[in-house]
Length: 248
Image (cartoon, rainbow, N blue to C red; front, side, top):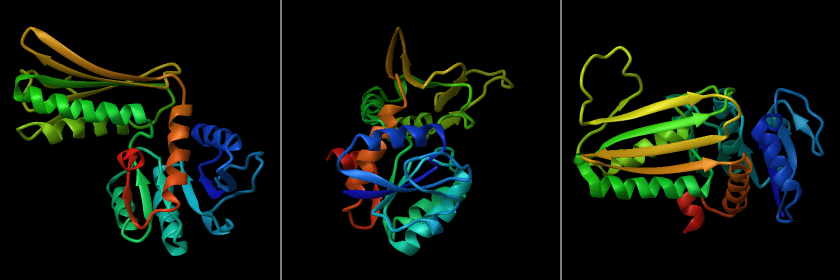
């Protein structure tokens, strides 16, 4: 049975992950890390240094917590599944640096369906090329802080990697009075209600439109993906892993 430290255990995703693990036989939470105290079936600490030994860390916290958490993981040689979104350059650099010493699982979205969507978008971009304009629309609940979503950027990167020309990400056309640049990938964020997560990639050509979309009905799909990743990662050598590694 894999022993897990859950970082960000008091958050919405942290609670969902805890519920998922309670019903599994292959792993257990030995400690949680959060600045907020909560009632849980496991001890909760304010910093990872207080935690007992574990086989792997699952992180659904905040970008500001990533660097200290990774420093702890590196010092104690504990694999880490990083699920926190909205990371800046410093945090991303820390993630990649940690992967040189410990196993790190990092994906902008832990859903298998979304990652398949990214592959389909890449295939579409390679076939449609420069003849189609690409626009991405993402929708999330009104409590989400970062915009655009990490998933939207992941999909944009997938499309851009397959196009025959350099791409320019365009987030706001409000102040521009000019025609759309052929190199643009438009990325638009919608925030409202309790939308869990919806992503739509539009390939608009002459007289035809292809749309590839994904809709999440609950947060459980992300939690299940994170827990599966943790169980997988605990037995891997140092390096960077993602959803592709999990399904290969």
